[in-house]
Image (tube, rainbow, N blue to C red):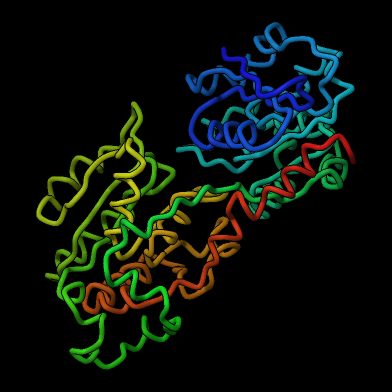
Length: 395
């Protein structure tokens, strides 16, 4: 367990039961950029046990502090249990933040879904004063699933819980710290920044070839399309669809380069080892790049970033790749239509494969395209005032 504090008497208590990944990044960001924050965290190990037992552990370790006015925690924590175990915390403004929700979180089989995790999140919402979601998709999918989720209870089912929770809910995007990558960008991406956005029809009806004097027809136009996949190596990111699409490109004799990044865990899907063997001649990067500069450099080198996720409530990796000048291809589902215009979405595996084929044949289309996503609107600089207001002790 870790306790940390900035400045004098703290007014905001930041509690994180799973201090890793995006959960850690958010706590660190709030503590380092907002005044009066004190953090109490547990290591990001054994998520299921953290969700089950963290409230009891934290109830014994959170210090008693009369200056606290606000409690901020993620939905991994059972806030209901913590409030019952620590009555002194119930007087605080309690802010519950959803990075993800367990009501629609995908499992390999429905019977593997543990009812308790979603139930704990519903209880936490009922106790919280403000319930924050990192996207409208996250919020709407949670609220619309409560009724059917509660039908799993054999009898005496609670009713209308969504109506009790909805008035407390707000959407506040996850704040991304986008670094300056101008020194890492290849020449054609730097030249493109001042260019006019190209049109979606480029993907359907290719333009005539660029003239030799066009910057897009320089060295970069001769290189094969570089496709990057910067996601966790887990089943919910659907690597099977991604690699099957690339194997179809290979079967057609299309040229492309590949970087498969993202963090790996204990249970790596078997498809990765087989894909590495079959796509070896195309691979430029394979595996997690723990050094942030190396990760950003790999994104800057790439032309197209692909998501094949079956689950995504926000998607930091896709936005980071767009910030680094990549052309995005995402499912027309989950959070993606909320962030990406229709021209970057596909509805079927066949559409994904067709778009990749077009770009492999004409990589200059991706290289001269200015992506119509304003990543700055998801930045900490843009969102800081809203987080400041959220963590004030006002309503």
